[in-house]
Image (spheres, rainbow, N blue to C red):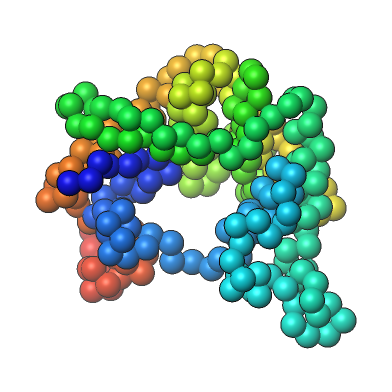
Length: 245
């Protein structure tokens, strides 16, 4: 069996729906089911923020989805994506205050679970400086405002973000970890620079390592992967479109 590769993002899928995540991992069926809009928007923001051409790593097919084919805007970005350029530039300008940085820095490190299972820890940090690791997160306006008010998102995903960035801080040996939440609003693209405390980094890094270990063990023992009726198209097909209590 080939060595297992496990990133924080992939591990989170296993924590949500083990069998669906296993299908995604083995290539049987992709996890992603929704519109590409938010993914492509985020890609544009990241490319501009990190000083690359806006279409870096965007396929020709996806570029066609982003560019208008009619009217006065033919050949230009659709309105949905124009805001990404403004937001990305604002994030780029803010990031420069931290000095020289490397972007999209990959992790590819041989590791082992507590049960002795060999695997390769993977992942990618959006930005690294001498002192810190950074993750960029674009957030819908209502979610951003709610997060400022309540300190959490409705789906609790801020906990995953903290685990992920803390794990990266551990892997890269950085003392600081920042999550830069960026509001998807071209007129007021606020940035919320959330810096984790030392105790948060230590705690969340351990929690992330535990999640990765559990995911690796599921890949190593696929018969133990359970299906969750999570409301997805995958679950609709698997459970026959019925949810029971």
